[in-house]
Image (cartoon, rainbow over the protein chains, first blue to last red):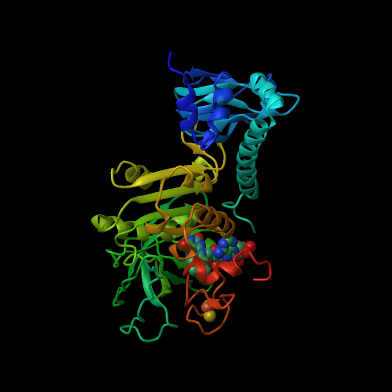
Length: 153
Length: 288
Ligand SMILES: Cc1cc2nc3c(=O)[nH]c(=O)nc-3n(C[C@H](O)[C@H](O)[C@H](O)COP(=O)(O)OP(=O)(O)OC[C@H]3O[C@@H](n4cnc5c(N)ncnc54)[C@H](O)[C@@H]3O)c2cc1C
Ligand code: FES
């Protein structure tokens, strides 16, 4: 059976990761696919996975009473979806829905957390990579909050 | 490769640059909210002028006032002077009220332009935010009219919501071309929108480019340009390969009054298109 290791190694999120760590991670990985319109996860549910997107588009949505669901970000090939599995209480903060057919690698959060506790070097690598993603999203959120294209008079 | 903003010669056919020429409104097109595009033609006896992509004019609504507005039309068709205006105050609102046949005053064209000539042989990335697509549109027309002279062409455009996407029809047409990559993103949307949601800087991550052979033309609100230039530099693009179009309040548009000063530069004369290394240290300074 073909292992997912080369696919993980080729994903931008795991670029230049030590093969020893990739080898540890691969046992937590599985191939998944979501049909267009299908929810990948929903706000408040237990966050047990994160996803390396390989194909398709995912919408991160937030439901606003009286306004309905709003899309706050789209993610696509090469992006990573979800970091709530890293931090207690391990619950999703948004809905994620496949806007098109989505193919991804799902990584089991509990499995990874155990491995990170056993191997802190691996834990450091993962947290560092997620910190970078979180920093980029925070910058983007600030820019969105500024509403720079609005008329400010 | 050295890129420089192009300085345009003064129009000697019309010696007094303080005197407006008369132009007649040929067409008014309603765009997104509070925004319209005016196509102007020279009124009786007025001679048309040519312009370069990135230049602006001073539009004078008689009895109300005069404001700088970028030319958003095709430089290959100078007889039709096109501007896209958003209503924010008295003069821009008065421009929105114009109807076909109304006459206004036009001074210009003024300022520097995008480095269309120098960019030949390079890849070009255009990054526009909001109404910033208007001053970049003439550059895109010029690049596409000599498409074979450039490497990869890529337009990244960010707007507030799907309803705020300027020139949506034209963007769709451009997106259909095989020799131009077009990416559009909005800051927020309902689930009915099938396109990208996120900030325009996130689009930069989607495109591969060779920093040594790429020039970036950036136009939009100043904060958006700050984030974009930072991201471009993080991706390896040198400040001498990045061009921004600046906006400052103006009066004379001729480098006399100092109204438009930005650090050591006068936006009306040295700009509005400036190479980023010239203004980098002033960008984002609170006192400026
Ligand atoms: C080189 C240059 C090119 C420009 N190109 C365009 C263009 O293509 N289309 C266009 O619609 N506008 C453009 N502008 C901006 C335009 O000149 C101003 O919106 C205009 O001067 C406002 O005049 P007003 O009398 O309508 O409003 P004002 O009474 O002067 O201003 C009303 C409100 O709008 C705010 N405001 C003024 N100028 C700007 C600005 N530049 N950006 C954001 N808010 C502003 C003011 O702070 C004030 O709160 C350009 C400016 C420059 C310097
Ligand atoms: S507007 Fe007078 S110097 Fe620039």
